[in-house]
Image 1: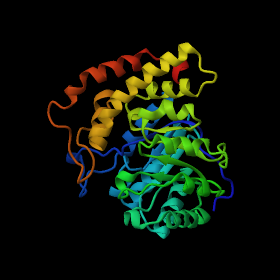
Image 2: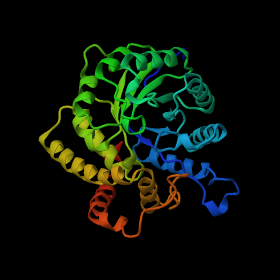
Image 3: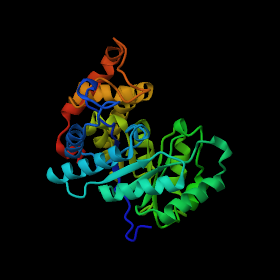
Image 4: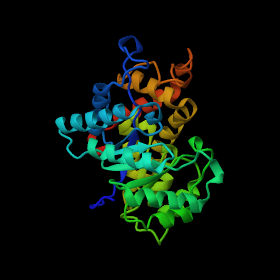
Length: 332
């Protein structure tokens, strides 16, 4: 277990996609990981208000990568951030497997590579057969032995519908090496119950949503922030929304700004929800210039169908105009 346990900061984290080199430039079975582009995009995010990164999460396709690729990615991004003037920049690294031993092996790799926290996906291979008691015990064993502080990651869409209940969060939040959670589902009530639970130390246990479309509502009720894919494309807009939502007291003027920004973010999040990793990568390339239009690794290789991007022109015009209007004081 980690001897010095620190919680991640509040704010906007980005679950960054893993960048791959064009297939034509890769001599390996699959497109090669592009650590240089990964680093450049990470520095771009750090300069534009993002508080930290999630590498190797679901959007990062950790499940499609081998051990050495995962290690090289984290260590490369850590070095690149340090060289760019962002020492100790917050990095969470994801584990997406069900084996306790392999989860701990990955967390040890991630610590050595430079991550500060592990974002540990709930074990969901057997779906609802895994009881809340079993899930609590699984996380307890991982947390007892992890070299990094960990966060609980609940994404029912990739874990056969497994939902972690507010009671389970309350119990696990007492563990000294469990420092937060990411809820990638739309049950806002459970976000609020956990972030407001008086039996949880919220300075230590941070609650993040995986959905930027509920950023304002959950931050109003003491959530720590979001781990949000849209911020990989439009970081200033999402970070500005967070900054306004966490400011107290909220003036009438700022409340109107929050409403406008939340609408702008929520309409763009519909695209993220519909097209997933392929859509995120296409948006990152079209808007920021980083990456390729070749999507992820099999079976999610590819790009959007012709004409799909253009269907969202009104949404893109709205958020692009917002992004360009924001200055550093708005998002940092």
